[in-house]
Length: 154
Ligand SMILES: [Zn+2]
Image 1 (cartoon, protein in one colour):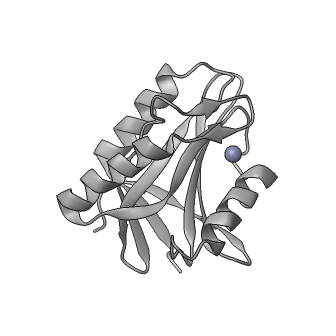
Image 2: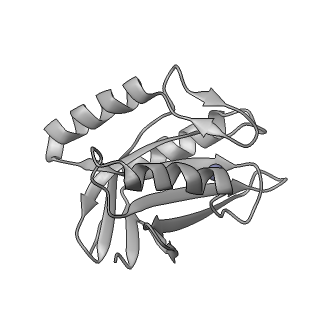
Image 3: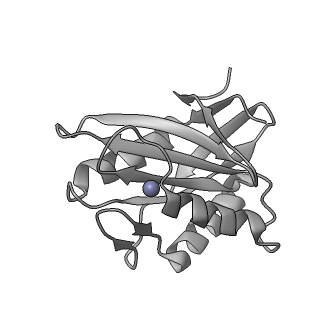
């Protein structure tokens, strides 16, 4: 089980730009692509939501075709794989909602996806739009909080 999540500056910039651009009461998000080094999960690409994503105050449904294209490009670039999702919540603390957990459980049960854990990065925005970032590693039977660090593994 990974003990830390490292998010590259490039991936973090994508998230920051999406959070800054998004309407304040709607969720936004995208896929996370990167590498699983065992004790460290490295996120090298954070996807933007894509043109066909659906957003509301408490749900975010990503644009699957857009996500698939991002994943294909990242795989060609450095064999990065789909390791999880990021999305915003209009409140804090940034913990997975029941809807989120049901969605992650579907991914973990899907034999085509072959996940044994799924990374969830949630950015909770408080009333002043200050962001609180939390990382979660979700397995079939547990949800573990994991620290999120900006930068490459040492
Ligand atoms: Zn959520």
